[in-house]
Image 1 (tube, rainbow, N blue to C red):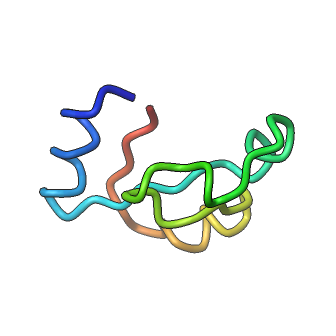
Image 2 (tube, helix red, strand yellow):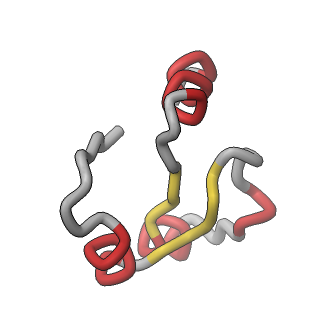
Length: 58
């Protein structure tokens, strides 16, 4: 993701999470991610966290 887009999302109050399946397939941990990414979550975690929210998939 372009850095300026990431900065705009976070500055606007948005939150960034990484996909658990993608992270596992690429052998990534939270330490490998940018500091603005809040964590690595599963699809079910995502559904719970975003109930009623406006979403942007990048």
